[in-house]
Image (tube, rainbow, N blue to C red):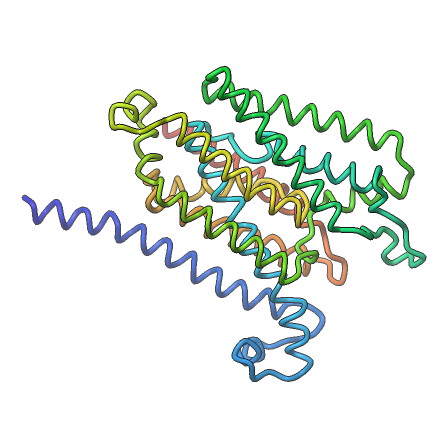
Length: 353
């Protein structure tokens, strides 16, 4: 009997490990393809040689200074947004929970509006090819990050003082997002045309903004956050059975929930403030993996991070190459691809019920 149980458990975990391995392999393949894609006609072997430090001067310049930071930004930011969405959905027990529905992205957009319009971080160039310029990206990043965390603290404070349910926390996030969206509209109403254009340019989402410094900051933050989530994985598994069941197992539901929401909001704020608004990754990535490997957070957390990396990497590569040399906004691509996919998953899940 014990041998049969052990065998079944090995098969259960083995299938999940195979799926995770396949996603890692796809990330590697698409990373090489993304680095090669573009006007420089870089070959895969040149990518490998450059990474090993044996590339030519031109290939080193293109790969290390332009292509590789963009690919790493896609992998890291995609992982962060997806794992944040995974934890938000688990903690609130709501499949629609994500950084956007909790108002964090709207708060970041308001901060960017304020920096560009009030503090003059947006201007115009004489070149018609690149007319809109964010001339002080650091002020934009700081303001976007600051207001993202303001939204987070407001949600946590309201939830803590009033002991709100998970559904009420989600509704509070929607209300706060609407409030910041209204603030952005008012600020834009009194702005000049070029400032509004700069705001729209920032909100599109652009992985090309990230240098190695931004990539490093995001990597440190997201890796540390993912480790925290993995440490809490058994608490999240217990909470999936309901609050009362989790409490009976010794889980401090309020502490675990709001700790997860705070860390999720922190990494989301960092990604959004550096790269702009990138929608649907935090919503669709965890849902795909939940349907493939189930709700066991030992596997769901790392697999959600990997799926988010893969989705954002594919979206950015598509945005760069579909009508090259024009680069489409990656945020629009993720929304355009993610919305019908998410609706399909919801319909499929409903039919199963």
